[in-house]
Amino acid sequence: MQAARNTGLDKNIYLIEVPKYDDEVLEFKFINAKKDLTYALETGNLPSKCTIEQTWDGRKCQSYCEVRHLCPYNNGSING
Image 1 (cartoon, one colour):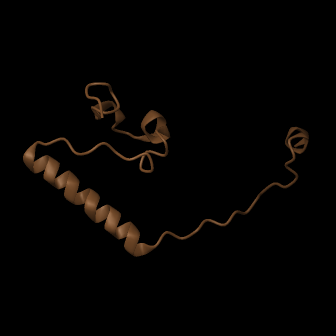
Image 2 (tube, helix red, strand yellow; image 1 turned 120 degrees about the vertical axis):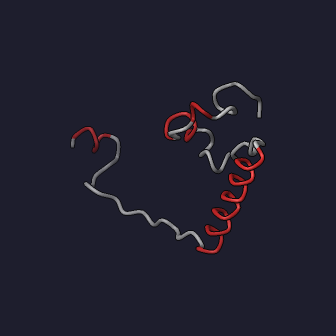
């Protein structure tokens, strides 16, 4: 606890407000992602590279995406 106090943290827990994502916007994003994936699977065409927002500035691709080793944009087999 002393180390935390030395860095300015003086509480055990901090509550932060997380804005609610609009349901319609979220649904639109998922519907479009599903359409893109379905099209890619049906045609064999590679889907577009994920956006910076989708990849959390690349952090998702580096550490969190479970299929990053299969992604040609991430594993170096294609430039995107």
